[in-house]
Length: 216
Image (cartoon, rainbow, N blue to C red):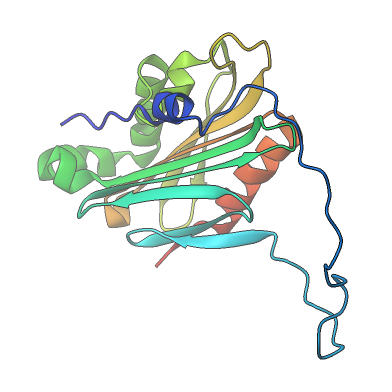
C-alpha cells in the first residue's frame, strides 16, 4: 500500500505557502492595554514559544503561532503547520506524517523492519529521496545531503538528511531537515519535514521536534 501525500503542492496551490509580497498592516495601538499590565495589576505571563501536539500514540512540540491542519485515521495521520512573515511570505513549514507499519504493510513485512530498525529507517528515507511521501518536499529539492542515522529510545532508529528547496518560480531558497523514524516496539513510522527561509529556524524546529518526541 502506498502512502503518498502531495501536501506541499496542496499548500502551495491553496495559498498556505505564500511566495508573494504583502503590505504589512499599519500598527494601531489606540485603546490597547499595556502588554505588561492587566486589570489585576499582575503582569501577564509571557506567551508560549511552543505547543504540544498529540498524535496517535506519540506527541511532539511545534512552534507557537503556526497555522496548523491535521488529519487522523485508525492507522495513519498527518500534521502540517506553517507560519507567515510580516511580508506575507511563508517563513516556516513543518510536516509530520505517521503510520502503523503492521497495519499498512502487513505483519510479515513489519517483522522484516523490526529485524533491522536502522535499515528500515534508512530505506524509508532513501525511497523519499526518489518520491517523498511527506509532501513531495525531499524529492523536489535541488540539493540533498547524504543521510545519517542514529538511535533513539525504545530501540527506535532515525535516518536524516538536510536539503534545500525552492517553490514555484521563486528564487528564495528554504533550508530543510528530513527525518524518518521507525520505532519497532510500536510498529510506528514517522516522517518529519522542517524547513524555513532562515536556516537557523529550520534547525530550531528540527531540534524541538526531536527533543520533545515522546511515546505515549
